[in-house]
Image 1 (cartoon, rainbow, N blue to C red):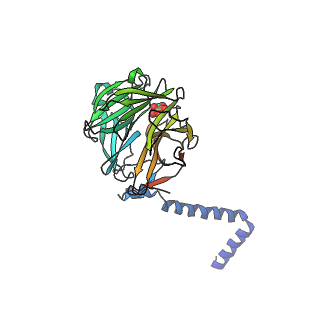
Image 2 (tube, protein in one colour):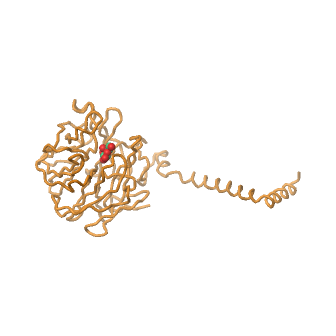
Image 3 (cartoon, rainbow, N blue to C red):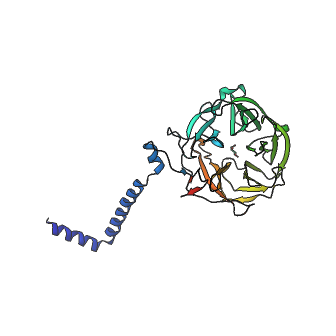
Length: 354
Ligand code: GAL
């Protein structure tokens, strides 16, 4: 068949078969999409393959450390030491309980070690450690870790626990697990104020109340039970930050691994009175649960990052992380919107959103 005959046949086909036209356009659309998709393979993945530093934090995607391993630091806390940000959180692999990562840009994280394990203490042999948080005590020159302690795969112990170390990257020495002033203690967090006073907040009375405690000067015990917040409110996953002279707390409802509506409140003094709780973000907090609020102070501004866990209740190790900028429409209000990725600028304090 000559070329011209073939062309004629194709023309005829198109004329008589409109479906041919449709199918061929679908085919070309698919090819085009594949090319676009291929070239847009997650930049971060590409960077990793090429061993180049990543440039932004991707929300809801698997975050990997500099060795390319998934970051295991759920229910985590953050603290800044010199040029490094440290990220400390739950690691449930094998006998590990808590892991430590550090970063100079909040995007590229280097694994620094497992700082609490089942071998750290006989009390930890069958323990379940959740939401570990670390602060530094200038007087004792020790890092102090508080956490939620359970034993034997159920949540009936409902205790707080404390461990210390003189080096944040080295194994912590486990001190004790206990119920503060006899109260049950589950989801928890720490807050260290500018004057060095530190506070522990945790869910008590079968998670019906949140109780706030002032810590002893060495941070290893509770000194005073300061306030019972939203009694009967059934809130957990607390995280506290101070902006100017206003304290804010974000917390969640109690629905286990399933996400729910986050709420926030504010207070002029950490002891209260605290405002009513108001909704934050959407009805599932963009499928996440609060774990920390990280202030990012720079030359231009101070940004506040909401950090949450996107739990996978079926397969814990598939859980992800969410980093979202918190907006403050007024001095007493917060707003949280979804963004796929953020690019913190540690110099200026800005969070460039993409
Ligand atoms: C959540 C809690 C998590 C974990 C989970 C287990 O309510 O915030 O830290 O304990 O329950 O179901």
